[in-house]
Image (cartoon, rainbow, N blue to C red; front, top):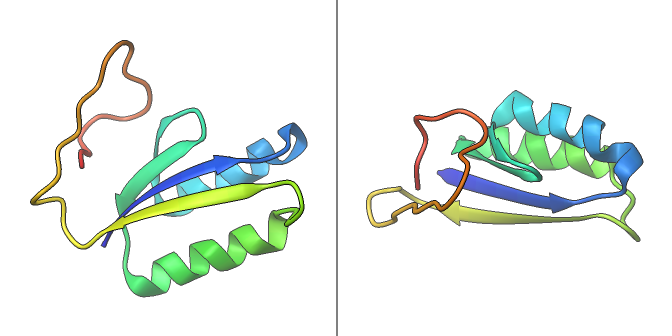
Amino acid sequence: MYVVMVYDVEEKRVGKILKIGRKYLTWVQNSVLEGELTEAQFERLKSELKRCMNEEKDSFIFYIFRTTKYSERQMLGVQKGQQGHFI
């Protein structure tokens, strides 16, 4: 599956959340990571995030695609993060 993770967390946890996210996904922009994951990797990612998050203040959104075949990624402005992944 292809996963896009978007998060909004308190500033003091941003570094830790980014570090966890980068273990599984590619950083593409502030608070946005994406990449190909197995079901098991996705569950491990969510489990690690749950251990670090404050459920009353932080939020995560996962956009999950079975394939990138029918999607398209368009950008405007400065490209951040690594190239090579698209959705």
